[in-house]
Amino acid sequence: MGPNEMREVLARAEAIQSGQALRLEDSGDVEALVEAASEAGLSRDAVLQALRERLLACAPLAAGETAFAKSADGHSYVANVEEVREHSVLVRFVRGGTAEVRQSDLVRFSPTPGLQIQANYPSWGWWSSTVLGYDEKSMTVSVSDNMGSEYKLPISEVRMPRPKSRSELAWQRFYVGAAIFAAGIGMGLLIFRFLQR
Image 1 (cartoon, rainbow, N blue to C red):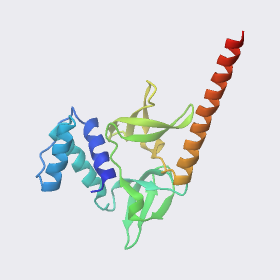
Image 2 (image 1 turned 180 degrees about the vertical axis):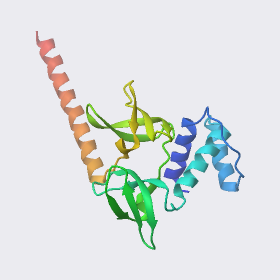
Image 3 (image 1 turned 90 degrees about the horizontal axis):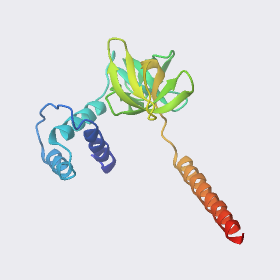
């Protein structure tokens, strides 16, 4: 398990800190991770539950299971696994359409509280959101828009955002830096003008 995966497990452990967890047989690596997390203030049960979820998410999917599957636009939408082939997986998207994708382009559908996703709100479209809960019977996800409002949406209206490329991240940093620089210059000019009076 790499450093990024360990950070994800620890972040998930924080999200479920107050929840109950099942017991897990400990190995040396798991015990070291649990010890480090305990020193950071996380409970053993929360870390073990997050680790279990991570291992389950990495297990190969089978026909009949539900997953987030990568679509042509790079985002991952909820889909049902139709058939597992030798080098690919046939999926049927809940929003409509089928696609043949690689197993690595699938993530098990597990909308646990705290999961960061995008939700398609009727009033303004796709927006970064946090999962609050999932009702398997009605196939709806309760989400927070991270601004104080909560919504209940069908699973067809949630997705995992496409990862940003390095160049997109670099340009994003550039624009933020340029905006801060411009704001600083503007503020400096205002102060200078004020002091001239």
